[in-house]
Amino acid sequence: MKKNKAFSFFQYLFAIAITLCTLGPFSWLVISSISYQKELTKVPLDWIPNEVTFKRYIDIFTNPNNDIAYAFKVSMLNSLIVSFCVATIALIVGSLAAYAFARLKFRFRQKLIYLFLFTYMIPPVVVVIPLYLILSNVGMLDTKGTLILLDLTFVIPFVIWIMQSYFSSFSKSFEEASAIDGCSRFQTLWHIVLPIVRPGIIATGILAFLLSWDEFFFSLLFTSSLEAKTISVAISEFSGKNAVDYGMIATGGVLASLPPIIIVFLFQRQLVQGMTAGGIKE
Amino acid sequence: MFYKGEPIMKKQLSEQRFAWLVIAPACVIVFGIVIFPLFTTFIYSLKNMDLTSSQYGQWVWLQNYLELLKDKEFWSTTGRTAYFTGVSLTVEITLGIFIALLLNEDIKGKTFLRTIIIIPWAVPTIVNGAMWKWIYHPEYGALNALLTQLGLIDHYQSWLGSPWLAMNMIIIADVWKMTPLVVLFFLASLQLRNLSIYEAARVDGANIFQRFYHLTIPFLKPTILVIIVVRTMEAFKVFDIIYATTRGGPANGTLTLTYDAYLKSFTNLQYSQGATISYLIAFMILTLTFLYVKVLKSEGAN
Image (spheres, one colour):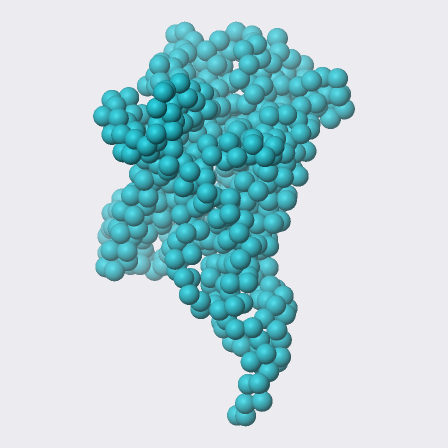
């Protein structure tokens, strides 16, 4: 198409504005994490620090005596463990269910789909009061296991929703052929269906990991010590205190953002497919 | 054709049984955890759960609901939640369409833009909140520094210091994180667009605004509706970013429904009130979703 000059000028102007707005805030977080406090609190502010320091990063990884740095490290590990377990379990359990919803005929199928969608939709605040009372009675507060179970209540429905569209995307003849060859239903699932939907499985697994990494409400209410506290809770606790080390919050923030950012860069194409697969179908 | 396969196929589990077998784990985990608390919360909302009351534990049926629905504060909180949802959605969708259209054009640096555009979405919500709180800082914040150095403001502002302004600043933070997601949805559906229609329209003398209004918007309409459904469900239960920035303040200016339910349940220990608000939130979300799905279906029928 022929373009006129003014239009393409505006396009580039817009592109520059988007770039600045997208990268600006996060770049400032990165700069804050490597600046000395005295430079961050200078008025007027210098955007490029005169000196940089990586002390906060080094503290987080190596110094067990700095309480906050140590808390960030342990809670980061907690987040990794919880998100990894949630993604794995949700992927297995959710994909199995999604397969049935997409490919099999059985009673209450439609009703069950709605029930799962409903659980995904309801705000978690609806279930937390009784959950809190029950869990504190049986002594299950503040453990990673509990947090994993709670996260699964919304990640499994999410996986079902996305995986369904992958399972319904190919022809039924594959399964029929395999059944005629004498495969059991589980063999068919493992050898025939799984390879077909593998891209979907990868994308959905990553989305499940990100969903659980970003989870905050359950972690806030049901974890309190370093035993199970996630990085989001550690950061919000630290930034909620009055006298704060802004550089340290920034450092925690950058570290907490790294796993999702790396994942998103590595798997961008699959992720976009996965996200839109669930949305565009219905 | 001969039916040698037939007897072997019969050895397979019946479809019904197999379906239930593979669905069972998901049902056990999800409903096993959710259903009991869901009912219990409903019962709390029908009872007097005030720990200091002499009528503790007695059934009051709909009284909690009626009291709440008569409460002006509850309606202002609902209004604020609707404002947050409406404004952030409108901005995200508008920006999202224009950014997606730009990324769909053949411009230099397109690949670079497409790669970086997703970064904000990857930043965890709590980090996003903490980051913007730092940017908005009244004494050392980057926003104050930037606007002062550009000569746009005379002196430093307290961006989160007044109720209405604080709400809008939080919306900006939410828009920064969520617009990339909306862009990705639009980009995916723009790729399915039939470009020859555009060429034809251009030949017929339709200018860029006419093409945008008569071709692009109607084409994107189903995607817009899907985004509205998904994002409303999320935005209406907003909690995390409020917790990370203003915790409902100042003067309740950013107090939203979920935050209110959280405060009532876990700070004031007003279990009934917390439970009642929670149910009203769920009810509102369900109603909105129902309405949207109706619209979606009637649009689809046309």
